Amino acid sequence: MKAWRNIVMILLLDSAIGVAPGVAGEVVPAAVPFGVGERLTFHIRYGFLPAGVATMEVREIVDCGGGRCYHITSEARSTKPFSLFFEVTDLVSSYMDVERLHPRRYEKDLKEGNYTRQEVVIFDQVNHTATYPDSSVVATPPDVQDVLSSLYYLRTKEIRVGETVVIQNHADRKNYPLEVRIVRTESVSVPAGEFECFVVEPILKSSGLFQHQGRLTVWLTNDSRRMPVMMKGKIIVGSISAVLAEAKPGG
Image (cartoon, rainbow, N blue to C red; front, side, top):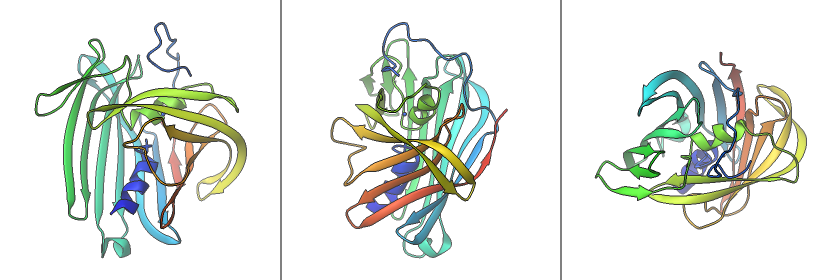
């Protein structure tokens, strides 16, 4: 069901996002705005219909691919009424290097109605490749991000209204330049509280994963956390949204 996949896309900027990270000598932040234990819970709506609940969580720091990594997950489940005609259980994981802030491993386990897909991608950030389970190897730009790590990478950036952030993204054996426009600031109220936010619009510069009808908009807090609190998208048959219901800070 394309409507649900657009919902999941919003959450990973899939939802998933400066200077492009491939520029040599880029300074990695001394501190990041998230930590182990951070858990963000979102309510998802398709039009006026409650469609599901999703969480984004920094679960732990683990050794992965020769370095210490944040184990970041995004999990989405459909509500019981919605599941009667379309059940969803999606889990995506990114293992993001704590020093260089790029992924070393990406996993997804998708169950959406009759559609299922499991995949593991290993990123070699030294030789700039992505390796898939069938042993195929795809060349990638330096410091490429996956669809989940992109959002966490964006959160580390200093952003200003009128600027554009470009992030090199990789998914489904292809590289996607992702352009994020910082449009304005705005106060928003969601179940988790009231927040001053930057309003940003991710735009894919080629067809593929992020291609959708209408506009995708994300609200990030205008503070050191850069926390996503609301995401909205227009599709052919209506609109979809995700709003922050609960935020647990990390260490």
